[in-house]
Length: 114
Length: 114
Image 1 (cartoon, rainbow over the protein chains, first blue to last red):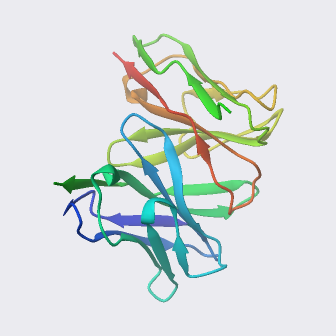
Image 2 (image 1 turned 90 degrees about the vertical axis):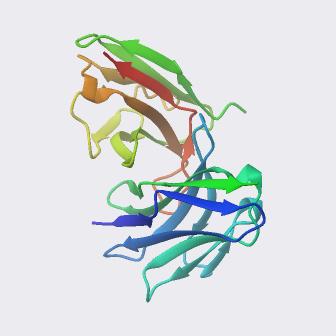
């Protein structure tokens, strides 16, 4: 069975500061990993995904994530936070078990302080 | 392009009432699924479908029924609502069952059961 753990349900950063959202995964097979973002009162949308092509993955809005197999981690980073980054971020792991089984983490709410 | 459309956006039910949450997608996606989102628990899979006429249970299927008569539509039925079903429900679709596939989400349906 696969799972993801997101450390910190709430993270606050100052505008312009580094954003670091942590995600660790567990999977018995090579995983596909995703970060989704949810803005208030909206559905989730894909930020970026790891599909084994490259360990450093760049996504939309300046976000990137690095897959580290030895640490079973897929942390999300952005060098400089913007007010518009305030949202909830979900890490997810996906495997195929006859169907695409996507398991989501519990989410991290990012607050950006002006 | 509308993507994934969910109706209604908000609904209040009394315990024991029934209702159907509608989900429609216009991307010709084979794979569709329903998730519920509860605070601190991330998204949990209720039911999914890998094509018209094919449905199966996810992690938390009790109290919910689904059917898939067309590629476009995937309604979720609550036969006898309970307060524990108070949640935000998301419908998602994907172009294939590949583990690397992106999920496209609707904007959610917020359900309160009194």
